[in-house]
Image (cartoon, rainbow, N blue to C red; front, side, top):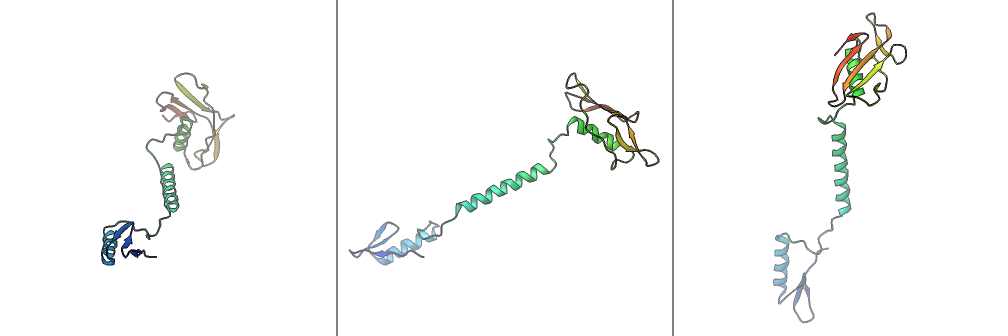
Length: 159
C-alpha cells in the first residue's frame, strides 16, 4: 500500500510529517525521498527473526565444518599416537587391533609408558603367513613434548 500526500482541512498538503502548499510540492518531496533511498513509511517491513535465524545457522555450519575438518592445532592423545604407529608398522594395518591400555607410569615421571602383553592385552596382528596372532608392543612418549621416543612391536624396534 503506497502512501500518498494527504490534503489537510486548511488546503495544505502533508507527507511524511511535512506540510506543503501544493500537491506538486508534496509529490516532489515524496519522489525525492524515494529516489534518495530514504525508507518510506509504507516500505515492507523486514522480518529480522528470519535474518537472525539464517545467521545463526550459517555460524553453526561454519563451526561444524571447522570442527570436522583437519585442523593444524589438533593433536592425537599420546595413547592414540602409539596405537596409530603400531598399526602402521604392522604387516596389515587395516586389520591390526591395538586395544586401550593405561599409562604404566600412572602420570608420574617425564615419560608415559604404554605396554601390550601377548597374554594380557595383546595387539592382534597378522604374521608373515597372514594368520592372526597376538603379539606384544610397547611405546614410550615424552610427557613434555608429547612425542614418541621409542616403540616396539613383537620384539622389534619400530622407533
